[in-house]
Length: 124
Image 1 (tube, helix red, strand yellow):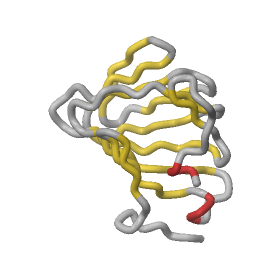
Image 2: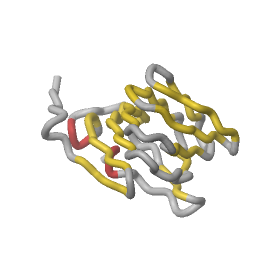
Image 3: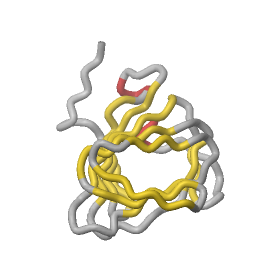
Image 4: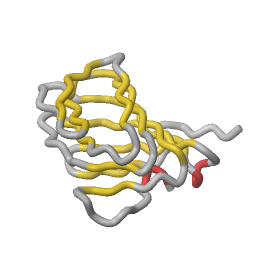
């Protein structure tokens, strides 16, 4: 069983959000991708969708999750289940960072703002 050390896992930064790729095909996973996400205070939402269900677990902080136009306040201990093909965004209008873990099936494709589908770097 491969061990992926968080301290040496690859990171990807987009705007005010840093993704740490923990499990993916390039790191030994066959079925599930998992990444840790750090969202800085004041981060604006970036609407996207996946062609598979995504599950996020809030570890610390608070955020506004928007699913198909409906806003939901989330905080540490909450889970966000985003159905396939559902428009989703996460904003952090608070003063503290948001930390969460996300899981998605291997092979899932993302779309940003209705653009072309792509495999996100955390899932490669």
